[in-house]
Amino acid sequence: MEVVIAPSAREAAIIAAGAFERLLAGADRPVIGLATGRSPLPTYRELIERCRDGRVSFARTRVFLLDEYVGLDPEHSQSCRSVIRRELLDQVDAPSGALVVPECAPAGLATAPEAYERRIADAGGIDLQLLGIGRNGHIGFNEPPSSLGSRTRLTTLAAATREDNAGSFDDDPEMVPRQGITQGVGTILEARHLLLIATGDTKSASVAGAVEGPVTAMVPASALQLHPRATVIIDEAAGRELQHADYYREACRNRFVWQHI
Ligand code: GLP
Figure: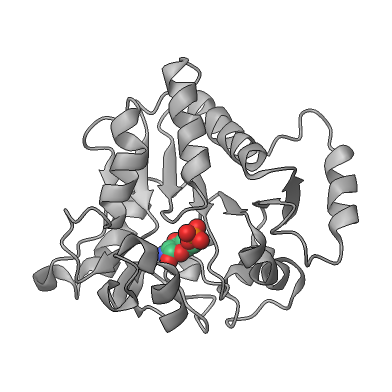
C-alpha cells in the first residue's frame, strides 16, 4: 500500500487524475471503476478539464459503478448512475454505452449480483478502481463487518452511512434508501489498481484504521493492505491520525520518476 499525503484536496485530485490520465493514454480498452460520494468530485472536475484540454479521452473506456442504491428510481438525481453521468461522463467524450450498472429493478435483483460480476469478468476485469471511504471504514456499500472475501451483493446501509449521505436527500436520513448493491470487498480486490481518496478530518480515524490498523472485516477498507497495488491519496486533515505520516512523506520523496502512482 502506498500512502500519498497531498497538501490539499485539490492536490489530491490532481494526483488521482494523473493515474487516470496514464491509464487512459496507455490502454487499448481501459476499464475503470468509479465511486460516488463527495471525495471523488474534485478528481472528476480535474478529469473534465483534462478532457477539454485534449489530455484525456474516455472514448474507448468502459466504466463500472462501484455501488448503487436499491429502492431508488434509477433516474433519481441521486442514484449513483445519475451522479456519475452528471459529474463526469456527460461532460467528457465517453460513448453513451460506456457505463455499466448493476440491475436494480425488483424483478432482476436476485440475479443482479452474479450478472454484474460476469459483466466485470467479460470486460477483462477493472484496471483502475476509484474508492472513497466511509467514516465507519466502509468501501462501496460494504459496511462493517463485511467479509473480506465478499462478492457483489445486496447489502443494508449502516445508520451512520444513511446519516452521512442524508445531504443528498433533503438532509433526511429517512429518505436515504436502506439497501444497496455493491461490489464486494473480494471483487474490489481483483481490480488491478485501487485508488482510495479521502479528504477532511472527518475521515482521519477511518483512514488510520484502514492504513495502520489490523486487516479486519470491521474496517472493510483495511482490505486494501492485502492488495499488491493500492494507493491511498489523502490530504493533511485526513492523515491527522496516522502514526507513520513522516515515513509516507519520506517514501514519496524517494520515489523514482518512473514509479508513477
Ligand atoms: C457512500 C458510497 C461510497 C463512498 C462513501 C464516502 O456511501 N457508497 O462509495 O465512497 O460513502 O462518501 P464521501 O466521499 O461523500 O464521504
